[in-house]
Structures are given as structure tokens and as C-alpha cells.
Image (tube, rainbow, N blue to C red; front, top):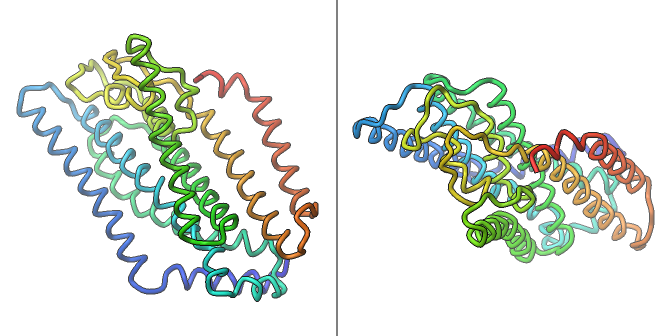
Length: 328
């Protein structure tokens, strides 16, 4: 890989990504929506207290933690792919793709640089949201392990979203078509799996749907990670215990047993998303290299590296079965 060419392309992509008012407006809108969600949830909790519901500080902290994290995850699920959706298709539309392939930069360098720029901007969005969690810390009820588990789930989901946008951009070569394909997949994975779990639960007397229905759902995954927090003392349904809020996302039905933790299927989601991300990177990279060398069936060094990574991923899945299957 030509290092000077890679650095030059990374610098160009970063300048293009941050040029103009669009990134600032997007970041400001993102934070404004999170603040509105946090304010609305806090006002709801204040209303509960005024009605005589016995809420203690840790319970309020957990409720704010749940609401803020779900808002962050929901926004990033749809924003992360947008950072890479036009990364390759825009080169086709500007008729600069063939020129880019003619540079000393390898196909792997081009694909990875496009992906890194998208991941970097998503990382900026995640870091910008972290100060809002200081409000949660003021009330307590959230351990460092809870925060780390949730943040890791959000990061893995966001990176997978970036790879999805990149793969759609490479495969379709048109930004409009890539956007349509990407968000169709996102809606199917988020709304479709949740709808299927709700139907299963309704047909089985409102019993909890199998976790396999929801393991691919990004909202259900972060809800499962959130639901591992221990109840802060005696909890009631009206106290907005996370299990009450998250039951619909983790079980397909409302769970009135507020002291029961959500199934930890987020572990399986971590492994699933990491495998999907590697596969999507492979698809994008192989497609670009095939176009560069005019041979679709060509097996390159990059293919060998990614195949090796997928083999290591499969071995990791095999040897950690007891760990990730515990939540299914």
C-alpha cells in the first residue's frame, strides 16, 4: 500500500467531509435532539414524582440512562451509513473513479480510507454525546461496567452501519440507489425483526419471543445491554425500571416483572455484527479490485487477508459458544 498516496487521500476525504456548514449543522441537530429527548424524559420523571410515585435518585439515573442511550442508538443507526453512502458512488457520478484507480493508491487503501473517514465522523458524534451522560452520573444508579457495555454496543453497531453504507455505495455506483438499498435493509432489520417478535409474542399468549428473533436488531441489542443493570433497591412498575421500558425491545412484549433482567443476547449481536462488517468490507474491496483489474474472479492478497480474518472470527464464535449462547 502506497503510504503517501493513502495519507493524501485521507486528508482529502477529511477536508471534504468537514467542508461547509453541513457537518456543523448535523452535529448541532444531533445534540439538540438528544437534549430534547433527555429533557422530555426528565419532565416525565418529575411528573411521576409529583403524582406520588416513590422514585429514588438511582432509579431516575437509570431511566435517564436508558432514554438517552436509546436516542443515541436510534440516531446513529440511521446516521452512520449516511457517512459512507456516497463515498464511492460520488466518484462514479463525478467521473473521477477511473482516475482514482489509476493512482498509485491500492484498492484496499481507497476502500479503507473511505471507511475510516466515515467511522471518524461517527466517532465524533459518539464523543459529542458523552458529556450528556454526566447528568446520569449525578443521579447514580449506573455502574462503569454498564456504561462500557452500552458504549461498546453502540460503537460496534455504528461501525457496522458504516460498512453497510460503503458496500451499498460500491455495489450500486449511484448515491440514490445506494441510499434506497441501505435504508431498506435498515428498516427491515429494525422494524421488521421487532414486528416479527411482536407477532410471535401475540400468538403465544404474550410470552417472551425467542431472542433469535431480535439478535440482529440494533435497538434490541442496546436494550439487552441496558437491561443488565441491577435494580437500585425496591422497584415498582411505575418507577420506570429499565426492564419495563426495554421489555418490548428485548422480548417482543411488555415485561411486568420489573426485577427480571433482560436476556443478554447483545453478546451474540457483537459477534454477528463483527462478522457482517468483515463480510461487507470484503465485498466492497473485492468489487473495487475486480473493477480495477477487470477480473471479477481474481483472488488477491486482500481477499486472502479478509478470508483469514473471517476464519479467525469463525473460530472465535466457535470457542465462545457458551458465552454468547447464554443470552439466546
